[in-house]
Image 1 (tube, rainbow, N blue to C red):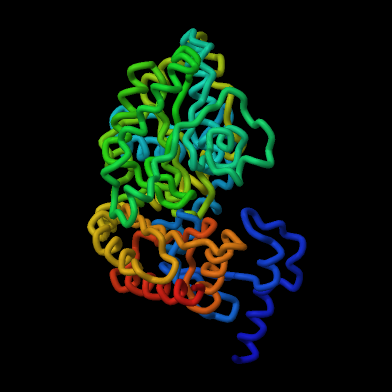
Image 2 (cartoon, helix red, strand yellow):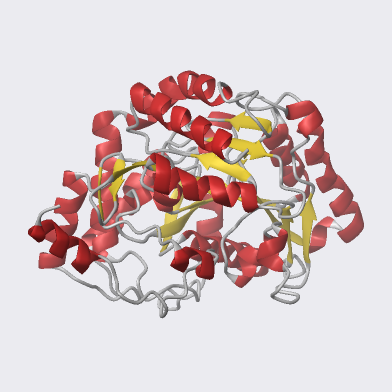
Amino acid sequence: MSLANTRNVAAAVPNDLESYWIPFTPNRAFKKAPRLIVRAKDMHYYRPDGRAVLDGTAGLWCTNAGHNRDPIVQAIQRQAAELDYAPAFQFSHPKAFELANRLAELAPGDLDHVFFANSGSEAIDTALKIALAYHNVRGQASRVRLIGRERGYHGVGFGGTAVGGIVGNRKYFGTLLAGVDHLPHTYNREHHAFTKGEPDWGAHLADDLERLVALHDASTIAAVIVEPMAGSTGVLPAPKGYLPRLRAICDKYGILLIFDEVITGFGRLGHAFAAERYGVTPDMITFAKGVTSGAVPMGGVIVRNGIYETFMQGPEHVTELFHGYTYSAHPLACAAALATLELYRQEGLFARAKALETRFADAAMSLKGLPNVLDIRTVGITAAVDLASKPDAVGKRGYDAMEKGFHEEGLMIRNMGDTLAVTPPLIVSEAQVDEIFDKLGRVIRAVA
């Protein structure tokens, strides 16, 4: 390595890792063998030593258009030079309205109004608050109960954690919100093992909502929130017919249905939103991640006309919804999102993902039969591989696989315990799909 390159590496590597408390990460293990990245382009990250790392995770399910795409970078640069910030309350800027219109055009049915936040977690808590306030404004203030689902992930706010169903995310934080209940999760290995796409078994699990209505009474239930595909728990696609059944039961009892599309939105399942794939129009869709391809934080909620219009009552000078964030519809985020949506359109990335789905699934299923592989699930451009846990260390095999992928194979994968997830940017080529799963196969053998 040349002296100049040595200096570049030295400048890129921090000399003290102690101060940063890294989220959702075993900090002590990380700091012993850091997985640092210093730049990115298209399908690759780059380490301080210059080695490329193939991105098999789209960052954190978010860089759907790939990394550092020129149109997005340039849009952010122009916006920063023109308008750095505009107050989110009582004032706004043109790009906020332009983006809201673009998102409403993409959303199905009469989901025509957008409330902006800055992350998926904020989007979820916003949707839950809108649901509670909506029933209150309609004179049904007794509807205060929120229904989530076991193994669901809805961010890390108090509301999202309460309706979420991942034990590790909940157990340290007390009672969270009162009045929350959960539907059963939809995964059954006996019926679902090695399924491509939506499993045939499991639509009947939506009927558990009838049990919760009988237990609590519909007059107390405000909303049900589910992910069309439960991602962070290990890629659990909705069974065939499950979401339409859930929609029908919600309609029967006047319960709002919220789709958490923070992961599934913007092409991950071959459509702008998974709601299109399943032919179901929810009352609200939460989004984040792919809306800016991860370049600038942004999230939000898209709501149906009827919900929005319910709030638009009373004196016009009075605020209709007492909620929002300092950085809602931030100018840089709006510029990044508009450029990202245009890139999706120009390159046909949603349709491209749909066309690539079968090839991607076949490549994932090629790992069947490798040591410790218990199940493989795929839907859209997303896959998960369940590995058998070590008897004395649950999660260690998955962690070792993630670490070996980065350090030895130049591959970024995600581990959720002993489940490995693969969710690359939608620009991934067929050759790169093969490369990802070839590398992953070597990793799985190495941790056997």
